[in-house]
Image 1 (tube, rainbow, N blue to C red):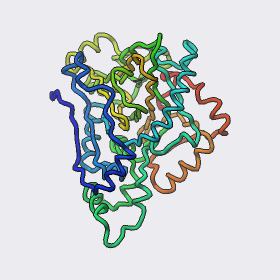
Image 2 (image 1 turned 30 degrees about the horizontal axis):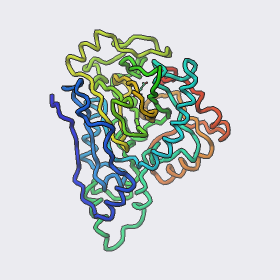
Image 3 (image 1 turned 90 degrees about the vertical axis):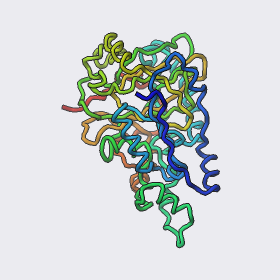
Image 4 (image 1 turned 180 degrees about the horizontal axis):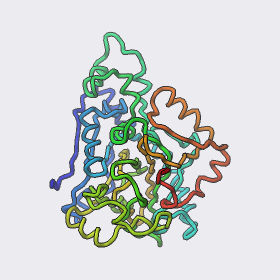
Length: 388
Ligand SMILES: O=C(O)CCC(=O)C(=O)O
């Protein structure tokens, strides 16, 4: 097994002016700490990281080669990281609000929506228009506007680069396919069902502790991919602020996964815990890793994959969005709850062919949305199972 981080960098061929545009909007920042900080995890095989070219980021679509790598990693490891895709300004805006919300939830202590320990919170994202930035929640690309323009004649070099660097498909088709959804639909099938939108927040303080290693699929489930979590950390993550521990390859029976490896009944606060014997066996075959993530990254993780939230050792709250895309055939009983002022946004994306998701929503008045979004349940209280 390769001990090296699998980093995939596609050919970045783009004019210097468009390149500086992208650097301003999608700056690539280093993670909080260098990978060398994880000496205790030496030997752990880390996840595949796909670094799209600037042309791909601008188009909101991975090239066929990078899509193959991303989809392959999700099938094989149960996880892929795509870096440099979420604009920092949008992350910063949401982070300011969610960090202050995290303090409110943390103050609720044992009464709060914590997962396994009070240092890890299940946190609703503000479900109102001013915080519902499509670039963050549905990884919409601004390039959609650009690419829906008619191709000028003669086309400037930028257009040739896009056509060449992507798939040689018509530009307008590619623009409809934002990156996270491109990966999830590559694995699950077209138009996944988006029915869960929340966040996991690691907070420092008395309750900060590691979670037990667990799977979020704590119920009898299909033995093939049926749900993918799209994680978007709002800041760079590393061991210091509680980067997630990952057990790559445990999403399948071959990797030791399945409900038989778990203890704790669905709906309990601490369900889905992996039994000690299974942990020991898996550690010997492929130990866990705790990869840092650069700001602007997104992670696509199989819901079945073993993982553990880790303690935040004194940094500001680390908020990480968690959107679950279910396979189009999955009979999820959940629905999103969003303020009615978000509706025109989602309808516009759908009308323009840029949503690429089925999104069942209970639309509620804005005041009610703002008054209730911090009163939702802890992670394992949600019903990720499907109708019989
Ligand atoms: O906060 C984290 O890093 C992961 C937490 C998580 O995924 C969970 O509670 O299931």
